[in-house]
Image (cartoon, rainbow, N blue to C red):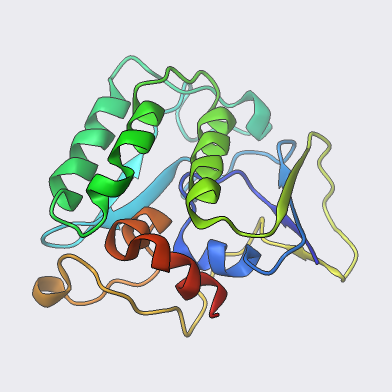
Amino acid sequence: MTIISPFLTFPPVSWWGSVAEAGTVVFDAGEHFQKMSYRNRYRVSGANNSILLSIPLVNGRDQHIPMSEVLIHNEDSWQVRHWRTLVSVYKRSPYFDHYEESLRPLFKTPFTHLIDFNRASVDWVKRQLKPDFETQETAIYQREYPPEVSDLRNSKKTPENLPKYYQVFEDRIGFIPDLSILDMLFSEGPEAKKFITKK
């Protein structure tokens, strides 16, 4: 099965569940940036509620240009803030220490284009989960694909029956579904793959 996907930042659990059984995931660098989506933000758990971490963009979020051209606004040290947030909320999680050393460089490496950071975030997670799918990219936007190709670019609904797993603050605020895959990795470690593939 082939899946067409936008470039997402540390995609949520539902995305990984959707692509886990795919043969090929094709990332669309030609589609236009969509505001209010996970193309430049990701949600993690917090002590009182979920926390939305956003990557600031040159010219803001109201721009209609291909994803390949979207530039990151690096003047406000967003990587420092994101990393401090992750350390603050997950430092006591079971597996944060396990992933910290390999993950930290993503928040110290300068990225100019949004898709470069998003690609790096997906590649990092792939190395941890070791899913079977291959990835490709297309720079040419195609509005519609044949029925046998699953298109995730405009998917807005959160799927039902998402896996429930241990969360750091669940005893305080309850379980929050469909957070960034980082939440599951820090909580379940290598076992996260079983939650995604249901095997």
